[in-house]
Length: 602
Ligand code: ADP
Ligand code: MG
Image 1 (cartoon, rainbow, N blue to C red):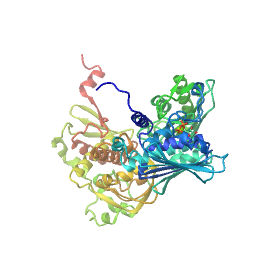
Image 2 (image 1 turned 180 degrees about the horizontal axis):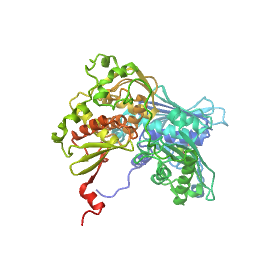
Image 3 (image 1 turned 90 degrees about the horizontal axis):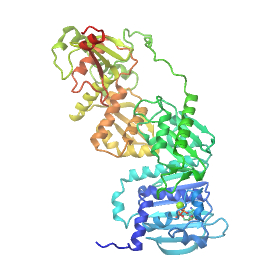
Image 4 (image 1 turned 30 degrees about the horizontal axis):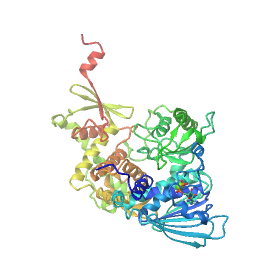
């Protein structure tokens, strides 16, 4: 094809694509305009995840009647007068592109009244063309309604995800601006139902309570480093360990009131938690950076989600130091790991007063006892009680020596020597010493059992005697709603229970004694990682989490019988040497190695 200059209509559509990627981008631009207009009250209403309708209503300064049409023209802005202004941007908008781009790919209605004028005006556009304009009454402020987004841009429409996904992107946008502007009252409604609101109290902590729930907010501490020499101020809230998250998605960053995505700034926050969080876990933090506008270029990307700093190193180290200082001020000095067991509980059940290891034979027998605690279902109560409760499967095995003969894949039969630091099982094999991580080993055992049951379609589910209500942040609630069917296949019976809350009726039997609310939060966090992968991978994530939660913890004293049972089960595993997360379950110290260490060889 010969080179041609594209027709205007096409140029406009291509440009629109840069600003308006999905319904959440429309919400972002309209909310930014409302904030720039000094609104103190912003209401966002969506239908069908914003596909059918997005309406943003504000009580800001409004648009003068004479300028309403102009507001929808390309490169029309009231926020930038000269090229110099571009180096000193103090508003969220400045490109004068948003309204024109949105109007190009939807039907827009704008009802606005400027504060200094006595009447307002109504403007209607379809595909960017004005179809009606008339005077109209309303209090000062602006309402922009965007309908049938992308209806005439099939290519875009095709790329939109499910309604729930688009909704959760919108939630993310509104929640972030509410965090950056705590003095503004935000309300977000999906299909007429309130999904999120902030109070406009001016206190970021109040917004965190609304966004993350009171339990999470209570675990966050203020970060407050006033402007340094370079004029960089850092504020916000940082989660105190052990509060953490499975991925980086709960690290929220703002630069001069603008939500940004910046891998290096994110890394600066993660760095501040160095050694404070477990490997592979990420902090929960809301960090606001303020610096002179001349120090930052926001004109890097049409959606303004990226910024460029004049002195990146200075900004990163300011963030890292501010967060680190806030954390260290609040964290107690590190304790040496405790080497003492919990004293055995008083009562008539010695010698092992601890609850049995979940999934073990003793655990299965103890169903009756658990029922007495009010946790276990009717169904479990109907199970016949074993006739001879004393005989433990493991002790039976250990006396007959059968385990030596039982050839297992990749692992010789082992003889238990003892427990180290209430965390490792010491065992002797034919060629040397095995140090087995009790938690990782148990995870592996539970994992293979659950996967086998799942493959046979026999994963046991158990109803809770008292169903548990779990409330989640809006974004997570949408995700959970999307994944209810998948979770059902794993034994979770979950019903919607009002706005962002769920009623959990049944869980995989293994979890019957778990803290269901905490478990569900962790499971949802796991599901949030990255793009939505295959169902099988999602199922695996859930089951991995179940195993991790239910596996015996480090620090728990195990009886000889318990250790023997665990090691026997491990011997039977397909892949006994790694846990479901791929970490080793054991370390091997060969006799040859020992001889070398002791200088017995040559
Ligand atoms: P920008 O925000 O980059 O200036 P927009 O296309 O988003 O460009 O908006 C164009 C202009 O319309 C703005 O500069 C502003 O003057 C006016 N405007 C848009 N939305 C509002 C609003 N909610 N309240 C007051 N004025 C608005
Ligand atoms: Mg704008």
